[in-house]
Length: 571
Image 1: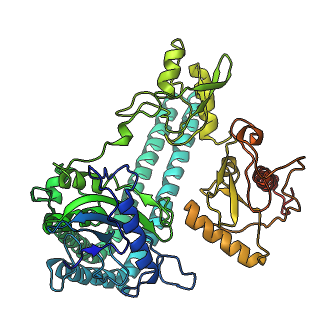
Image 2: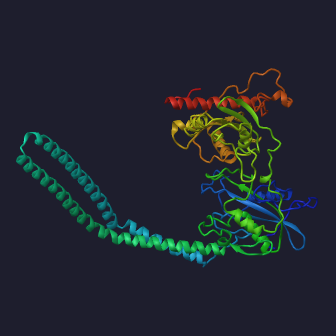
Image 3: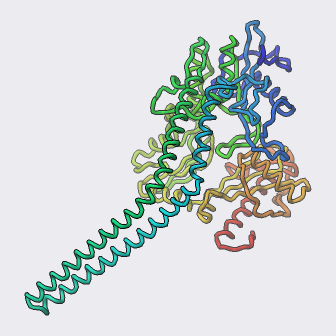
């Protein structure tokens, strides 16, 4: 079979999983890990296609990292192998034999989609010509200029009439005490006529300007009507292509029941998300079911640089996406016995919620990892529910901010509505200092830790944030190469694809002066505080904590300099 890959690694002693992988939360099976390593080895050495994943610093082509998937399967001869696929399309639009084909290849020569795209291209070209037409641009400019002049003049005339009205009112007020009835009546008629004259003049002026602008608008409308008609035709064509494409993307399940995207996303008010059906998992299952292969286990991994909109790390495993894949895979894996959904397992039941500070208004708790901040759809146990149960008389929403379920850390809650409102305001205005420290769990990286301080946004008023990166051992690299390597590691391990270098600090000694420091120390002896431990690196135990503090000091020094408007940056 063309896309059935035989394992190069011996797998005869490996026990097959009893159930298929739950694709939205899983620990990869050993077979999936072996298949992944073999595919990754192929990607590192392949010459079948051209695509810049962002791993070659000398490649200047557009960087696009990709999700790849492996599906371990059994064929009719009971042989175990695997299939592999990539999400979306490759840069050179090729379909290497290593990977299973797309569910529907919209770019087959002469396909309805290619023809439709060509028709839309023609419309776009026509729109471009119309919008760049010299006469069209002149008329557009003339309308804008005349409209501005007219609005200015009419505004001036209205202001003049307003002042005249006020003046007439003042005249009448004075005259009523100075003039007799006949003289006052005569003055009133005169002022009334003046008012009519002003109103008539304004109306005449408006009609004059309207006639003047309408003449230009009639010429301009000829162009605009053509543009509107072309845009309407383009939209209709685009919608037709999209709907036809959705109908062509049809997916099988184990019983070979076929459903297209329009049936799967069966709410007429909701269109299937862009790229639906192009992810690796649907491609793999489609090929397996179409070719009578039995799915055993699967895994998906990221290859290359992280996209700007998501955190992805090179070679890491990831679950199938919820937006595009969940409705499709729900159909494709119907009647397939899968592993338990660990997302529904309440991992917090046996965990205690430690209160580390409390007063009349505030509660500060230490939220353990795998513990919800607020109740979920399935799991109700959370910091909120426990605090609500413990403090039934507390008012207001209690929760001020949240931490992700898998994240441990300090969580701030309130006992009163007033305290909650005050703290909410501080979080919204980002006046609360919230330093975050991240450790890089890799031995071969230069970066030891990163320090991120959220309150800097109050100074810059932008989406940019200040990041301090600590390198314990710079391996005698030149400054330029060191910065380049750090930026690459931030992109690969932290998903930070865009960063600008500000300042380089050399800290003479990042080690605390500790007596009797040892390489082998039991956990209790290495514990500094409840959440911070001394940890070893390329130099000595203890340097990690000192490096973190040094990084924090550098970052806070930069923040203070920015706030005070100083050009020089000092710690």
